[in-house]
Image (cartoon, rainbow, N blue to C red; front, side, top):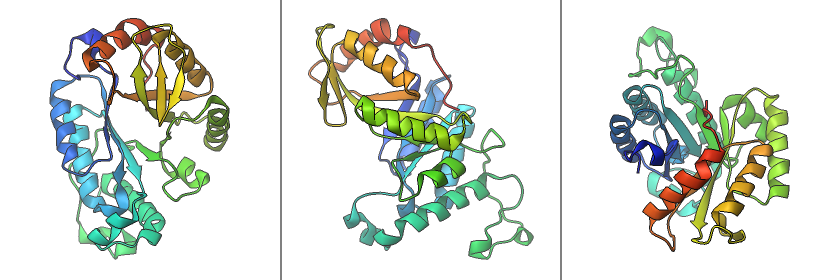
Length: 263
């Protein structure tokens, strides 16, 4: 999809619930695309070694010329944690420490992690460094066992599953209040079943919407008015061939929404 003709190329490509080796796929996409955002949605950080995540993400960022967006989560499957020798109940603390490690690894100069007894005098560093001095933008999926205040202060975007418009209004208002209009975007992934009839009315489905293109345009417009900066579509499963859905999105829907940068 990412390498299709310009009218069909997406504005972002997001890998869902991924491991480190999936970042290799984003590295490939970095080589065959020019301007789409490459994102994860999301790496379960407490189950990974943060320094390896930092290095892999920075590698994709360098290969893509600074187009990496790192989506992170704390995980919600207790059965996975014993497999990695990790404590499910401590995943919130592990997540905070992991974000601290990512930031330290991307910072210029020797790596400093006082919590791990690592000081600048060790003269160790993590390479490569991200393209931008501020590091790679981090989006938190859900709450990651953190307070909204912590997420607003320590990360760069909020990644939340779709809600009805009333509940969405409350979430985006809270995010805007916490970030004080600081330009940190609110992002939403959603399952989309685009009906063949453009006049088909919208119907909620699990984690998304079944709708015709006209109602989709209206719904996305309302989401934008409420403060949603970016919506990503999961097109599988779908009743129609994905190529047909992509064509309709490109021709009939995307022209209503001029491109905006995520970060």
